[in-house]
Structures are given as C-alpha cells and as structure tokens.
Length: 159
Image (tube, rainbow, N blue to C red):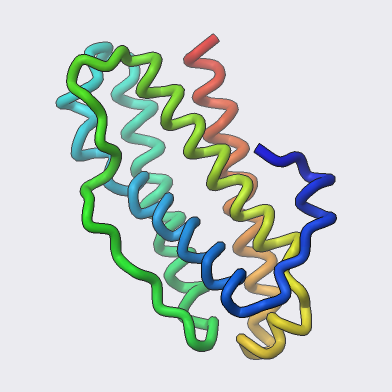
C-alpha cells in the first residue's frame, strides 16, 4: 500500500488512467457488496458474522455513492464483475479470510485516495460539470473515512 506522500506525488492526467482507477474501485466495492453470499457459508466463528455483515452493508452504500458519482462523469461506464464476491476456499481459516478482506480495504482506501488527491483538476473539468466537482471530492472524502473505519474494525478483530 502506498503512503499518502506517494499518492500526493502521483498525477492522474489522462482519461484512461482515471477510468482504470474508477474501474478498479468499482470492482472492489462490487466484490465487497457480494460478501453476504459467503459470510454464513465460509466463516466458522459466529463472532465475525456481525462485522462482515456490516462491511457488506457499508459496501452496498459505498457502491451506491460510487454509482451516483460515476453517473456525473462523462464517458465512463463501469464493467460488471462476473463473480459473486470473493472466491474463498471452504477450509481457509477465519483469520486468513479477514486478512484478505483487510487487504482489499487497504486497496479501496488507496484507490479512493488516488481519485481524491491525484486527479488533475483540469481533467475533472473536462469530464464533469464544474458544479459536480465539490460533490466529487466530498463523496471521495466520505468513502476514504469509511475505509479507514473498516480497516480499524478489522484490525481490532485480528489483534
């Protein structure tokens, strides 16, 4: 995971890079949204059920906010995933599953931070209405805070 200094030094200044980053985070949230499909089948410790259900519900909200944001971006249509969430082995230990979820939350945080801090403002002006740019930043800040909250929740379970 890149730190915030590295993110702030990066620049996304082409539509292709911007679209790729949007697609990556869209795919992550879509996978997270599918967590409820495997929570009950794979996790053996009932104490993790509430946490994973909460993460799945939050991800549904995140994806809805992301969909709303994407609808304001000219020329981008996300590709849907073929899979229903994560592909875990049934004999994988609960902690390994939580580690994988934590890694994906770090990836989501990275991509949201990249979209907030590294996208060239001139590029944004070409791809969305000027009036929607503050909403873009507010939505991304909300999503960043949500991912930080998820990381904290997962770490407290893993410690």
